[in-house]
Length: 266
Image 1 (cartoon, helix red, strand yellow):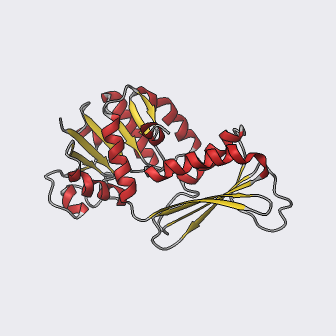
Image 2 (image 1 turned 180 degrees about the vertical axis):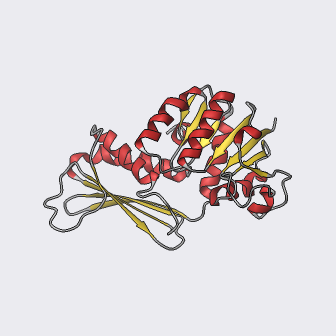
Image 3 (image 1 turned 90 degrees about the horizontal axis):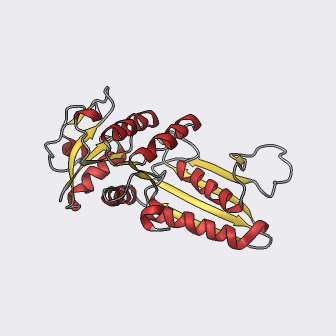
């Protein structure tokens, strides 16, 4: 049976990539395309905007115009829009995949409250490789103990709005939790006379430039040796395919909040 997909943020980089790849997924079909009310692509065919064949699906400004319980929402919009879309998903008991990043602490609390009320998969990075990188970082943390300092370096294109990336922050949280240091203070930069580096500190450095899709490096620096775990996204296709795989998987799950790692069993 084919399931309808509603893409939120349809005219953005990720939205276009998802719409471009959708025809490869025979169990999924584009049913709706959503953008902000002031977006210049409103009313245009979503397929044409994505650079593929016409889809007969116009881009509209309100999710409620096309939403029903038998659709799956794939959301790469903005934090405030994603929260509104999640509220709509809860009302309609529709599954929703959220790949938006840049949520504030208050918005994260709203996500925590709303997400378990429907089938919801949230991930700051939809890449299968990043899910594995996170697990490898946890294993390294467990194996190396406290004798290694941890630094995370991420680099993205010049247009990325939030910094550090949601993925870098998720990696830092995973490492801190593995250490049993929930609430660990992160260091986002150093300048001047900063003194000795605290052993429990996790450094997170954000670099921006060019058209880089997304690089993440987790560095474990010890005495006389260093381990680096690296993931480089070569195109947005890896994120789009992860999101579409999540949409397929989420259809069959009970109500609850999930992650890409849940989908992969990591």
